[in-house]
Image 1 (cartoon, helix red, strand yellow):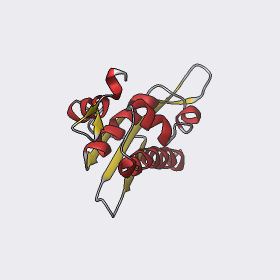
Image 2: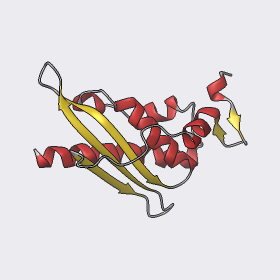
Image 3: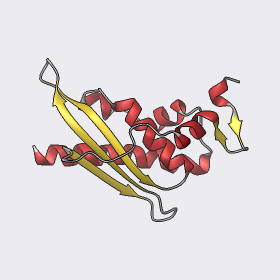
Length: 136
């Protein structure tokens, strides 16, 4: 088994624990171009994703910067961090192609009971992009 797939404490992979303890792109973007807020009333997790959008040389919108604030469990924070890594620098079109399975794979797996966290992360991204498009 690869190092990132090693299970820690019987529940989470090392990658999940690393991104929980040292999340990437944590924080808020002032004057964000798009903000996505989603939550799960059953578990109580709430995620905010903030995006800053620019245009590349081809005049395509891309995610220049992305940050998150998440109130939730280990998996919620880890999936929020990973989605920012996966889409930062991507065009909006390519960012929308990121799936919950991409997130789970990047983390080396998640317990089935925590898959909803990866869905929340994707939904938060979609909401941020929807908000950006509505403001254009």
